[in-house]
Length: 452
Image (cartoon, rainbow, N blue to C red; front, side, top):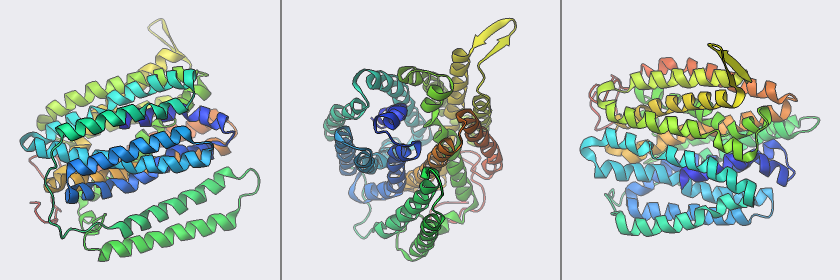
């Protein structure tokens, strides 16, 4: 439900812009409001599920996601749609950390393998979502993709009641840092609103307003850091960030979200704008990406104990960067050994390649973070998700501003995609600071319960 819901909304993005007669920057908030709230919820959700138990937490997240979907389907204007996506994001941001905790508790002896296989489920939804979403948007309108989540959510609630155990709980003395979460949300929101003002100004940019929002965002971030230093159980443990492997892994997560994952949200718009595809076709062309991810992630998950972490992350990063570079060229066809490959088959090949890179990289990068503190799987997964989603939020915000402000859409997409490939390559040194394998941990781990 999470993957289908997310990928189908990206397909509807061009239609939302037209139906609500709004700019790309405002329509981008339909994607970004969800991603922003999911970003903040990720570390909170892991902690909440640790405290109250996996089952009740997972069921509440499912109810919120389903209710947000229903409200989004009924939204009469773009602003209420953005607001209802916030509700959906609260639920969506809770799924991954909570579910990862369930998997880890059920399979403690083979955690690395099953966390990797668990990650390979998402591309199935990523394959169904764009195809089904593209067809539904073309046939029934964009509201249908939100209605789709309602019966799925009801089924998931029934299965959760039947199949999930409550799971382990922490002692009742545990606390949840809601103040820190609010400050982090406020900081990111004001900074992004400032960016939105730059992109959404048709003539003169209101620099005074932009400067005020930016100053407020920076000030709130300073307050967030102060809060995390004094909180009993902060959502971002600053002491943990002093560990070079953990810091490197999460800087990499931000960059990976900024480049590979963030640009993926704009691919349907890329297909419609550059290759003149229909909404349905823009969904279908994402299928090779999902298939490549599924196959590669299953193989990597099975082999991760032998391969270790660094090698698949490095290979996947190089493949993803090369694919983004090819996309930036917007090639309309090539001749290979006397055979002509047209624009559409070539685009399918490139997207399949980026899916393979993603599938090789993701199981290893997921486990590399968890390996740093395996007794806190849900919390670590939440932090990893927060940093990765933070990259996605920034990517969509910057991408929509560039597409709106640069008159030439081809030039804008070249800047977005080529820049993403370059930034991803710059992140490669971080890989060599992460844990090498499940049995070899790099020096610098000072967190309690984690041996050097």
